Length: 100
View 1 (cartoon, rainbow, N blue to C red):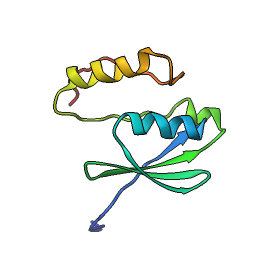
View 2 (cartoon, rainbow, N blue to C red):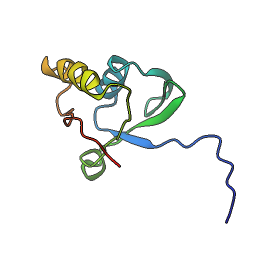
View 3 (tube, rainbow, N blue to C red):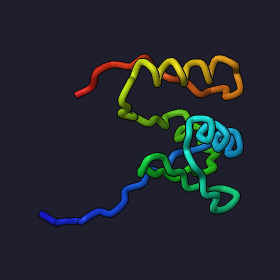
């Protein structure tokens, strides 16, 4: 077996509307390092992801993040409230459930 000794593993998340997506992640508490007009590096509690501007509906429509949080009910309620005002059309959140 290969020991990769990973120091970092970052998913690339598609953003159909790059500016709106950056605003959404800021509202969720992610810090951002704007790299260029189509790529931003996001940081949250030692976790990172790359947000990439992308017009590929197959990718943007199927992008999903699974997040483990301390209090799933409180987190769900806070994000649902954020989405309720309609500022982030297309963003959605599923009810929390226990995963293996």
